Length: 368
Image 1 (cartoon, helix red, strand yellow):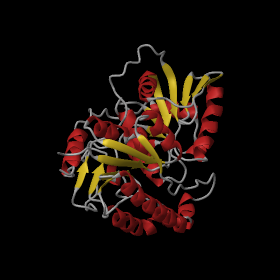
Image 2 (image 1 turned 45 degrees about the horizontal axis):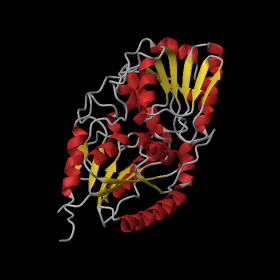
Image 3 (image 1 turned 90 degrees about the vertical axis):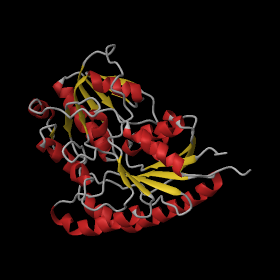
Image 4 (image 1 turned 90 degrees about the horizontal axis):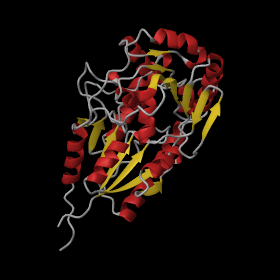
């Protein structure tokens, strides 16, 4: 008699994106009868606790970068490397205890490189196999690739949240590489918690929707910047603050500030907006692609992945972007009219088969 599989799902806590894109994975695991434990920290913990109230939550701290308001993020990360390794070691030790204590059969880690285990089957989710660097940072790119591949090789399986098609993908050369770190890799197609079929007819059209995301202090820096320009512009706008720990709605002249939105509210807001302004975080891009949305991207300063994605999508004539230091709302809206918007992705059916195969692979049986 086959017993219920216990799966530990653990997203990175650098912003909400890694947690939100795990929603469809978690939903399928639950639908197929798995017992799901959720391990996270800070805002991802709060988000998952609200989204899956019946799942057991476990605090699993990890390294969180401090994004400087000024200066080089690359230098900050290099100087933080010893602390990063220390936190990774501590998190892995805690993971082994969690596996033993809760009888975990499978670990699914979204971008937490340290959460592999020889005790159980481990799956790693990432779209960053080819970390992008610029200028002098390119000197470190081979070393960075070697390091992350060393960690990924400790997992049994790799899931890449994008289309395998080189011409119709969202991540470009971030995840479409010549040599993969493991033989057992699968493209899942884009992952989003949002549903295209959610209606927005009961909502008034929005001139602008602003989706805030990412780690502090840059999330707050961008919120202050965009709020100041919106008040001058007088466009009717909604700003979604990505603060799941709060439950507030405030009106500030022409701006509605919403602390957090559930899946249905988020889908309705995106559908009702003429244009979305956001960070070009990959999870946000996947969410917006569900609706084929027009967007203006403002990369987080120092995040080379976001800068690469913003440039790539601009070069494809999908979406306009400006750097935060020179961002001008009125100019950006005008120029964005020349761009087509993101390509609309089809509903993801591939993930269902991957989850079914994963659960059937673990042949644990209860004792007779």
